[in-house]
Image (cartoon, rainbow, N blue to C red):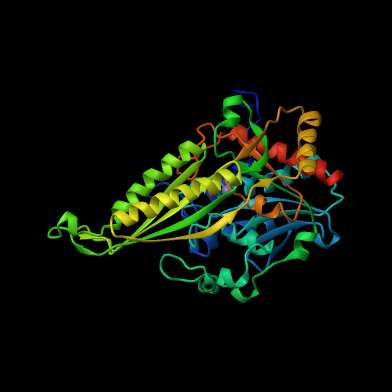
Length: 415
Ligand code: HGY
Ligand code: MN
Ligand code: MN
């Protein structure tokens, strides 16, 4: 036993974690760069396949590149599915996504160890391109499968080097013309439960190891293109400049102000500058806004406020501005019956104190929740840091997550 009374992680968990930890890790930053359809992504996919095969599970890849591992025949229906994603944001942490996939395999091991007989098919899934780090749109694999991203729209997605999603899929050995909605596959799922590291400190502040998700805030991504005039940094008088960097910078500050007033969040975390020369006034500053709020009305008002401010700043500097909404995910309220069932399984049967909490982070579970009864488990994150190499969860808490997931899967498979 470890010093706070929880058993150490099972060897299989430690081994999976160790195998996966070098994949796509940048030696300089220590963060992960596991972007869709790259070599690192392919290595993660090979790892998933090996884990499935080592456990004698039936392995398949669906038309959208999501990977599935099955115990029992999914065609029997009412399947219980768990899993998450293996891709990352630029220089992401080790836990966001992989914890849910590794815990899924570890929970299956635990259930086998308990001698549980499954009356229903049990599935483990790795959804492709959850973070949208390469093509700008999050949850591409689950959106396509749920019919919430059209084929034509997906085919238009392009990365920073001008490579389209179909080109990237093809280069990785997948057929981009096969993508699209997969209602039959989803109709076989009776419940989907995604385990995820918490991306905040609510659990830690209350001294809880594990929590259940209530809702996901509505959120979206907007692209702001400020176009001015490239010119010489040394010879152009200040009054003669049409500098888009100025209106961009003022917009960043306006976003912060609007978010504070709304009790919400707004972030410019990505920027592209042309010509991107140290001695040139930019011709274009392209900034991406990520905005999230507890409800739709607040989010709409905040983004409108930021856009209006950006247009005023652009006009002041003789700059043109275009704003494009690149993606949007409405509020997700997880299935109440399933949520209550998880609370019952973990609370009454396993004797855990399990708080129910909302989150501002997006998940494949949120995308699926419109089609499939869906729930989420969160595992304590003592610093709350996520989307950063510093993201962390203690091994004891990961073990508590695996046990909770195993309890939930066992309970759901018995229904
Ligand atoms: O950006 C998000 O909320 C998620 O982590 N994909
Ligand atoms: Mn993430
Ligand atoms: Mn995630």
